[in-house]
Length: 218
Image (cartoon, rainbow, N blue to C red; front, side, top):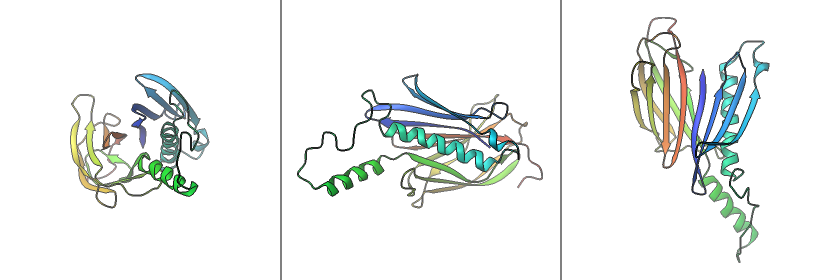
């Protein structure tokens, strides 16, 4: 199950850090924080207690984490946390162009700077002592269009060793990165898989705990 998202977002020459975490079943809350220069600018918390009676569904919880994280990123990109606040559409525009041209130009600029969304398509869970066929997809948050040439690095984190690189590469023209990774034997809850995706100034970080294998390794 995914435990959190971390994304650096550039907006008007400033780098904002957006962090979203699952606080755990003991405190079934999804918490998002927006930082600028180490200072917390905004926070948002939502409960997923409604998912607990039937047992937490990893897919449903991941979807909520992702949706809340992307909403916070969008708030940053819309200028909600700029020192001067959000600018109204068309503010400062002095042009002989028609309204439709202005709108199209505005939309093209918005899509060009949309947030990078990175999704783990496979596996659903990382298990110790198992080989996994890794499938990662990169797309634009607003347009859902594939994003190529995103640098992907997948590493194993443990309390006793430095991060160990498992695989790395770039997304293809369809926005996919595929590889095979072997997770070495580790104790339950004592390791995590870290995925870093970078494209120019934007960085997305995802992390999953490693579970014990329930059967023979693949």
